[in-house]
Length: 145
Image (cartoon, rainbow, N blue to C red):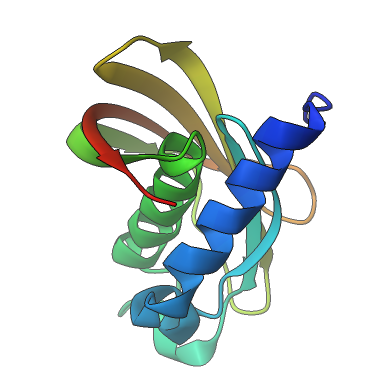
């Protein structure tokens, strides 16, 4: 569960999320539902559809990566400064299946003036960890709001 955020940081994260979603056609294509955002935090969810499966009837790794990258983006931009990914890695631990409800949760591990580091977990409805993603973001001087 996420930590409660002071109203100002929570409202900034919510405003940034709303602004980002206005133009984020790819997250809409994937059917990502952003359930919660806060300072340095995002939790989103999606259901695995037939068009998300690979040739072995498992969730395509690119879908998992894209969902984790979106959670990372919401979390690292939540402070109101435009941030961009510098480096990301992902480890696939289990395969998702058709109909699975995947929860993707991004948590800030470190935040400095120019760099933030985030850990992202993708789990299915049974709590099985499907993937672990680590992202490092460069924090620009551009204010989002």
